[in-house]
Image (cartoon, rainbow, N blue to C red; front, side, top):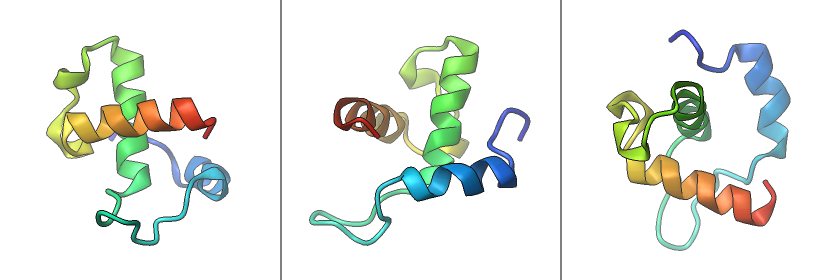
Length: 73
């Protein structure tokens, strides 16, 4: 989709992200999908609950953003 990470952008960003290996409590939703949701929300100035479903549940997008903001990711 327009505004989503390109393959070269994703390749540069991916090494900086936490492992996708299953953690206690289950698997993570795909990082790229969630980051695209965060970018969509930032670019559109929308509220979190307005993030389109194609980026996963809005609560997941918000919580991942919040977690990464707090831990410095």
